Image (tube, rainbow, N blue to C red; front, side, top):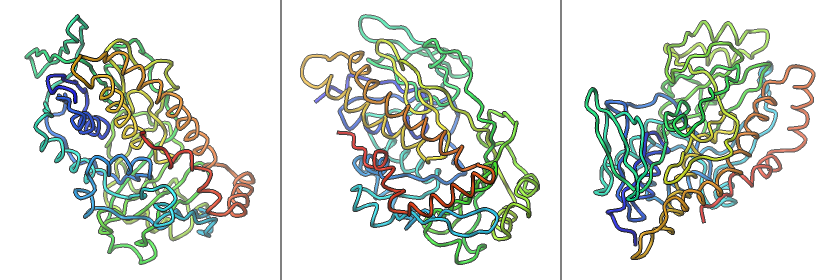
Length: 403
């Protein structure tokens, strides 16, 4: 076993950072999480967790905490925007769990965050420091020292490794030499959550429903054990805000999802929420290297991706599992291991896969938003292929295992 004196510092308490802390603590490390927010607030959005992500969360013992909040979708129902016609239905549910050995889950991001926080605070070897901003680090013969700040007070934290899980606009990524800006995808997403009883029984079914339109698409699915419906509308736009939860307007949605291009059922759903939140979509090209010495990146800090494959959080969760495995293997035993070598091993195991998912997400986004007549050809091809064959195309994605 590793010694709990071997401390790992994680910058960022998002899904990736929290999962990494739990995974590392399970390997015997002491972990300090630095989070610049004064409190971790519930993020108001649903999240899809495919089998490659749920496999890790279940292995970390989080199933019981998450169970009351989960919905297991029976399928992904793909629909044409104008007619509302079902194009294809991709089976999930017990079929997917049997095929991949782990289920597909729908839940509220806040419920996932709360479960991770509960596990973090319950573990004696994990310390969460709120209101602390990472600023810099220095490597020395005994590991590294992280410089941080709480208000006007400068603080130090020692450790054997530093992990940047600080998101799309990562400070640590810039400190490692990449000062390029994230790439704007010329699309904006608006999200809302409404009570399930406000929609028709058809829209409460345990399905991920995906409507494909011209330069736009709509996704909705039940969350919170079926008590709420999560709605996400994504369309072409030039708003480049950096906020995750900027206020959005219902009229802005209805203006873009017009009656000429969208079925009445879709527009009726979009008219229900009183409150919308929006964010601009960004990603970055794959990095040739994620770190140097005892420092690396994780999740969106390393490989932000567009949401069209529902894999952003899943990739961060996968990163966490591989990071813990590599560090645990390198530092196991009586003699201190080499964290830098372990981090390079982690990066080599993750770079190609995350880059492939980034590329696939971009391609899927382009396919979703095709104009006629290309969209008609797409719909015919999807229908002819059928749901099972479509799901098989993503075996490489869903059937991933940490070891």
